[in-house]
Length: 98
Image (tube, rainbow, N blue to C red):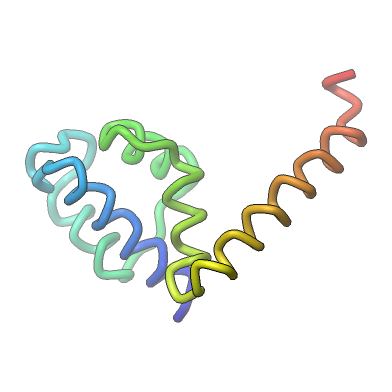
């Protein structure tokens, strides 16, 4: 599955999990949200952040789901370990933070 379709499934699942309609989200047009949830468009990072926060989930959760949607539970757990390890490595080389 493509990352675009994974992201589409993640956005739709998050919205449904919270019981919010496309119209009730109030951050974008229903047409745009529908195109995102069908994988026909890809949001910018700013728009993904806006939509995810309006739904009530962290945008990283939606992205993580997009990459994990076809994985087994064991593979999802391994992916989580990889991401945590890579974040720790990035922090060591982020000169702006230290």
